[in-house]
Structures are given as C-alpha cells and as structure tokens.
Image 1: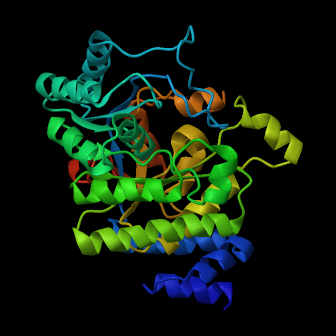
Image 2: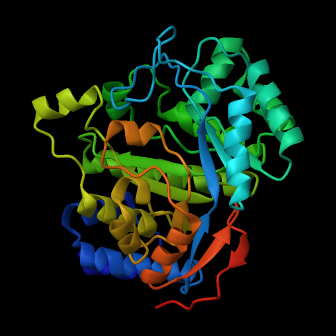
Length: 375
C-alpha cells in the first residue's frame, strides 16, 4: 500500500495495521504525516483549542536500586546525596502549586528498598487530609510493582490499598520502549513489558486515571516502536471493553542521554540521538495508529517551546503541564526545561494558533481562556 493510501485510510477513520505503521516510519514524510495526524486530531478534539494542566512534579525520593542506564537522577542507598522529602518540604511545594491555581501533583521517585507500603499509604492520607483540593497521581507501574515485591503482596492488593489511601491516578512513566529486547539493554533490572502493561491493566480496573508514555532514541528499531504502539492500542481496546476506563492520553518524548551512564554506550555504537524531526514524526504516527486514544500531549520540557508548538499541528491537542520542577529528565540533559509559568504557556498556545484551556487530569475543561482569540 502506498503512503498516501495509508494516510487516507487513517483520515477516513479506518484502523491502521502494524505493517501500515512500519511503512509510515520507513517512508512517510513529516509534512504529510503531520497534516494527516492534525486532521485526525481535529475529529477527536475541538480544533480551536489546545489544553494544558496546572500541576507540579514532586520527586519524593531519589533513592533507587534499578540502575537504569538512561537515568542521571537516582542515587544508591546510603549515598550522600540521597534524600526522602519531609512533610514540610511537601507542604511548601504544594502551597506554591495552589498559589497558581494548580489542581494536581505528580509524585514519582525511585525503587527505594527501605520505604514500605505503609509509608506510601501514610503519605497519601496526609495529602488527602491536608490538601483535599489537590489530586494525587503517583508512583509509576515500576514503582508500584517494586512495592508489591518488597511486601510480597499481589499488585492488585497494593493498588487497592493505595487507592483507598487517596491515590487518584497512576502516571505512565517507565514505559520507555515496550519491547523486552530494548528493555534488557537499557534497564535490565526494571520490570519488563508485560509487567508494565499488567500494572496499567489493574489500574484501569481500579478506576485510576492513567497515561501512556513512549521514549524514543535508545537505538531501537522502527519495529520496536511499532511493537510499543501496538501493545498500547491492544491494552486500550481491552480496558475499554472490560471496564470503560483506560489511558487518557499518549505522551511521547525523546531520550535525554547527555549525562547518563548510557551516553558512553551511545558513543561506542555510533548512535544518533533522536532529534526534533524524529520526535514529530513519531508523535504524528502515534496519533494515526492509536485510534482509540482521545488525547496526545506535546513535550515542551524535552523538545523546547518551538517544537512543542509545531506538535500542536502534528497530532497533539494538549500542550502538557506546568510541572514547576522537573528533576529526572533535566538531569540527563542540560538542554531541557524544568518549569513554565501559566501565563507563558497560554501565550505559547495562542502563538501556535489555538485558544488555551486549562483542564484537569481527565481532560475536563476547567477554564477556557476567551480573553484572547487564537492568532
């Protein structure tokens, strides 16, 4: 099938096959991919609007025993720079978020061998009691799986207890590339593909809000990328049929490898880091292939403002979140951004030609900025 035929197939609402997606990776030109992806995006979301979320990333600890080759953030137990945040530090960060109208915190850390399930439950209960107006999305699939293994408990039991304590959502971090051939090389101690998918499967059935992520640029093949997208789409189909609760959005970005242990491996293999064109093509292909995902988010922290604005015309309908601080990706590359002001985000969305609208975790519109029309 010709590329134009595949793009017309997607535009008309027909599901692409994995072979179609592979052909788009191999032969598709961005100008055509982006136009088709934008057309599909406009059938699923208000063409005039680009959404954003006012939230804050909080890395509750940097202690981790997983030793992923692409991570410069973690510290081993006992390291002089290892930390676990105090309640006072949490309070300061959340107070700053509430002062700018924030509605969510995103808690992520490492695989800490000394923090038991009770610690996480106590934290969530304290957050719910102290800040009932701020939603807690926390602990990626790999983190909750690590907790379950530490406690020798079924993962579903751990998720149930965390949800009872106040967990509202499970972030989609740690997916990287959902293909074990890649995962064995870049993160051999981390949970494998089926473990990540199963954690999300259980989270969907618990009613938790979830997102799906993808990180390209590890030297993976196009086939690996298609495998990743296919597995996400299959789980989305399964969860929608089983319980009606599934991934709210897909969020791709590129690996930041400037200062991480993997940087030496990249140089030895002669790998070219994924750049802006790789990112935009991948985002567009994902929008075309993931026909059961309502939202696709741009990544201004890793790509910069200009490329994130282009992404809004290449399949993305969401500009991302304010974050306020970002410690994991930013420590892997000095070129990344770690925060953005709400007013700046609104201006950037308008400059891209859209009306900015603040949303919540589940993409319900909280406030549509009609003060200035799209340019």
